[in-house]
Amino acid sequence: MYDIIIIGAGPAGLTAAIYARRASKSVLVLEALSYGGQIINTPDIENYPAVPHVSGFVFATKVYEQAQELGAEFVYEKAVGIRDNGGTKTVVTTENEYEGKAVIIATGSENRKLGLPNEADLVGRGVSYCATCDGAFYRKKVVAVVGGGNTALEDALYLADLAETVYVIHRRDAFRGDESTVSALKQRDNVKFVYNSTITKLNADKRLTSIEVTDKDGGVSTLEVNGLFVAVGRIPENQNFAEIIKLDDAGYVAAGEDCITNAPGIFAAGDNRTKSVRQLVTAAADGAVAATEAVRYISSLTA
Ligand code: NAP
Image 1 (tube, rainbow, N blue to C red):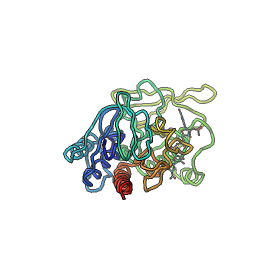
Image 2 (cartoon, rainbow, N blue to C red; image 1 turned 135 degrees about the vertical axis):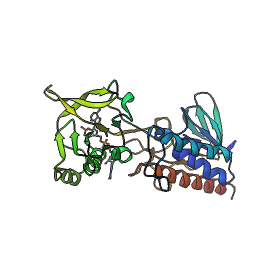
Image 3 (cartoon, rainbow, N blue to C red; image 1 turned 90 degrees about the horizontal axis):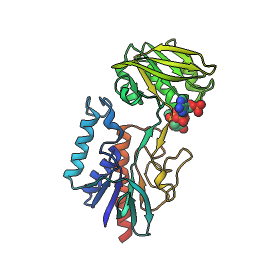
Image 4 (cartoon, rainbow, N blue to C red; image 1 turned 45 degrees about the horizontal axis):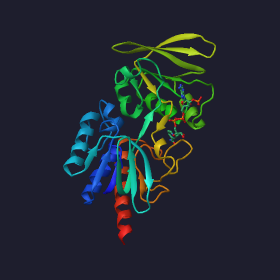
């Protein structure tokens, strides 16, 4: 029996482990793959306070070691469900079952991919899923943003301040995101809109060099770009817990800034929770809040 079981060893889960251990709770962290979450793919983090430059791998390793040194236990198994036994919860993995008094779900979310053959190989070499993380590498360069939601529009606006030219490529001629952001983008001379089009090929010579764009009538053109920012939505990794906790329409855990879900004793932290700013610093903050709330919940069981 653990005090707190944390599902996911990304920045939110690892920070929750640090806070829970510092509150003298026994902690099990379950992770399906390897520690670090999606930040591990970021070559250079420039926006974490007091840390001007650090690779995602180094950052994640330091947080992991910190949690381990404080006494968190790690088991590499995929959690596939939670059973609520009233006072305790059982987390079911592909191999075992673990019992805890409280559970923190910190499974993150995954960027939706375009699904092009060499897309994964070019991440960090021209292809990015995070303009605020990687935009600074494209000062005075030519970039494209693909997507029509608020993320794509805000990414394009952010990049328009840095890059020489920003192509906004959308598969329809009407944007899903806010009209005010569309209007702001239309004021920018260096933003060019490519409507009714999808990206059908990524051309590369070690790095991305150009993209093939196909319009709805089948017309094919090539755009020379240094960078491509993919912002076609995210897929939260909550499907395995949908029976026990309430999700919002987009599949995120319906929990506010206190990280409390509809199920007493089950908390959500990080990118898998309903929120507007999904960044490393907000994931870490969620970890601290969720662990603190979990500790408070455990105290209430014995009060
Ligand atoms: P989103 O709203 O789901 O938009 C995804 C966009 O990608 C859509 O325009 C969609 O096209 C397009 N798309 C999806 N799959 C595609 C594919 N395979 N190829 C090409 N295009 C594809 O995602 P999001 O922009 O990440 O936003 C997620 C949520 O966060 C939204 O609720 C958004 O409002 C919110 N958000 C809010 C803020 C803010 O409040 N400041 C900032 C960012 C995000 P279609 O339109 O044709 O479906």
